[in-house]
Image 1 (cartoon, one colour):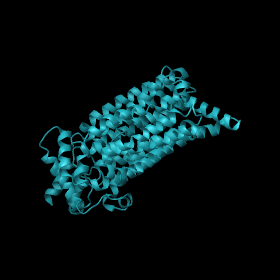
Image 2: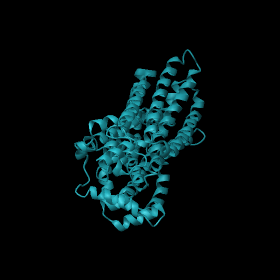
Image 3: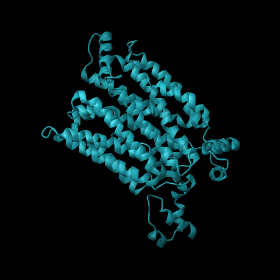
Image 4: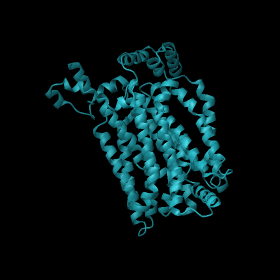
Length: 482
């Protein structure tokens, strides 16, 4: 939720923050900021959040191995209080640097949480609910964005006097989290596979599942532990050079970078300016923005409650494809709106469509699949790679988009359109369906040895469902033949 809130919180008070920068700059140097310098300074304020996020994601491997999954979330919470204090007192102390520093620190916290929370949920969830629980973070991202949009209305905290309080409100949900989360158990998979603490793992499983008999789940975890007896947790360097997980790694890179390069952050960071360029009246923009937030929450719920029925692949393919169509629609609408005034409403519909398409699948499934495509020994390193590239792409979009918009105008959205369609094609042709499969089964789906032992005729008759992954009936046939 904090990640979503921080994505959108700089949108509505943008002009007030820029005015604050202008005033303080003039007080220090007795000359106003140029328009280019102000754009650069505000772009840094927006995008420094992603730099912090990238740093936080790089720390994940060390933190989860030392403190555990739940322990990492709890121990990183003080960062939010520090950041909230910096941003909240920046205006009183007349220091724009405190806003930028606060955004950077909240980014570090979000970078940690955005990797660790899906990892925790993926490891505590039974396989039939792993997709549902894995998409819950995307709903709370949408709720965080929606909260920032509502609180940013002129009647609430969207006034010039209130923006420091608006930025610092992140401390409230963090305080609630610190009151509740310590009462929850640690990840059973972490306790058994990495810490070899069998009693604690069984106790945690019984609490999570609400039943005494957990032997079948313990057996599956033991099987994975035995397969990793001689394998320690791999480093990022080892992961990058491990050919046995090459296609899993490429898939994580593509979907995590595609998630951000789809243009969703440009929409969230600069919603008001996008609507302004589309010709929406200024006094209607805050309410239009809140409307988009309500729709994205609804789309998040749709994705969450259909992922276990439809699977991961259909939601990813449909989500990215729909986003690509809407990016093309925005371009067309902006080009034609001077001649056809009603096209500005098409722009609004396309913005809503991009957000809805994102929240249905691409918002949360990349984090689920990062957990599902790797065994316990590789999972932390995979989250570091996926998370750092995710945040690097986030920074790139947040920093470059204002300048891209200034130079390319309406055609800037065609870049995002191309990215969306390319990612959808990659998922269609390469990534297998992982619904209702254990981590061991998913790992075996990518093993080349399954195919090298098949005869040429069997391979010709087999139907592929992505790289290294036969349809389940073909895979079972091949195994029975072996």
